[in-house]
Image (tube, rainbow, N blue to C red):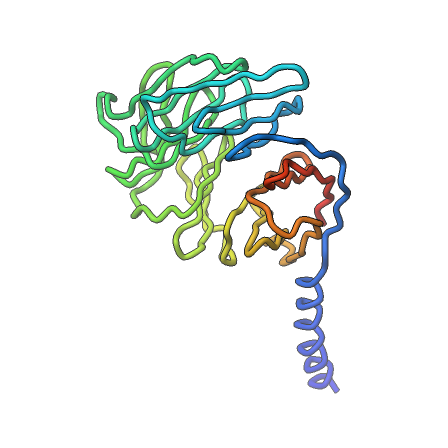
Length: 265
């Protein structure tokens, strides 16, 4: 009888896993915003939108539009909006970062090649205490760059560059390698393996256990801790990019931005 019970549990458990993976997250449309943009970058806490058009960076509220343009640095590679008073624009081809204030005035320009110890930066983002996260491909290390003191310190051990995607917050640098393995590094240099992620076209990390990704215009919310995978039901059949912040899922299409209220499981 005991063996029978174990056998039944073995049969039931994977069935529940399959059901969990097929569950869906319902969303509620809350607003639509028309926008003329090549790339939508997201919103800040006040609802201001940020986007790129013709390699010009824009900020827009209900009444005003600000812009920043720097033709000498080439294409904008990545934008970090975590601190709207200190926006980070990364120009990878010129190994440079530009810091902007909340009206998109240039506060500081950093050329990592001119650092006393030259760096070749392939990933960067805002960190805490006047610092930037940087991945230096010369030494293959994650480090912190103090942009007030122009001082750099490596915090991680060396590892081969294999960064398919990266994202950071003030205390943690996340990256996914070419084999879809997810890692994190804290400000003390501790590297943690988070898990394996399914193949994706675009991904947004919510926290150290949860993320949303798209594949072939299908949106999936996944929770590694709960081992749950859920399809997000939206009406758009195709989209260029999505953005998640504070339970608002923004879908960027050729027609504009559709914002949904979403409650993650």
